[in-house]
Amino acid sequence: MVCSRCILSLFMLLIVPLTGCEKSPQLTHIPEHATIVAFGDSLTVGVGAKQSQNYPCILAELSDRTVVNAGVSGEVTEQGRQRFSAVMDDNAPQLVILIEGGNDILRNRNIAETRQNLAWMIATAQQQGVEVVLLGVPTKNLFADAAPLYNQLAVEYQLVYDDELLADLLRTPSYKSDVIHLNAKGYRAMAEAIHALLVEHGAL
Image (cartoon, rainbow, N blue to C red; front, top):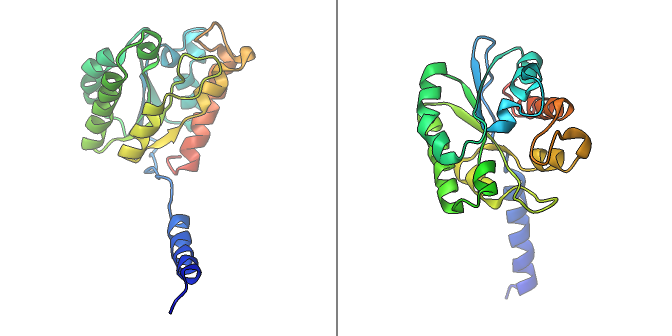
């Protein structure tokens, strides 16, 4: 008769290799002529720094790719959803960097609706064969981490995702121009981190 300890040991031997084979999502390499769309709100616009110092401008320099700044200050996800398709049609990107939902959180919008709006944008892009990189936006609490809905979306849609970058930057006073915006130094750090993320996952 096989003992229960032996059965457990056999199970662990089988399960460990399976979990070790899990890989994070990879991105398709972006050719030099292709376009990246940076979609979001004031953190994408670059409020708190000069226009040339926003993260899409710096990312364009680092990546040697066209990066379209499709940010709108003060936008909530419901508004972003309304213009998303037009931005996609006008720019035909290969990749979208999505950083939106901060204004929903600040204004205490319904979280389920925020998640639904972001999910719609992600699904719309993927249906067009466009890959999405998602950055998590922190909750309103001091020193907060990214709101859980972002990780849920990343898992559901198998996205390349960063849940720490914005939270870390917004916790660092030397990177901020005010309570919710970055300064030139912060946007450069943001661009460099996103560039590294794209390199890590094969886009550059």
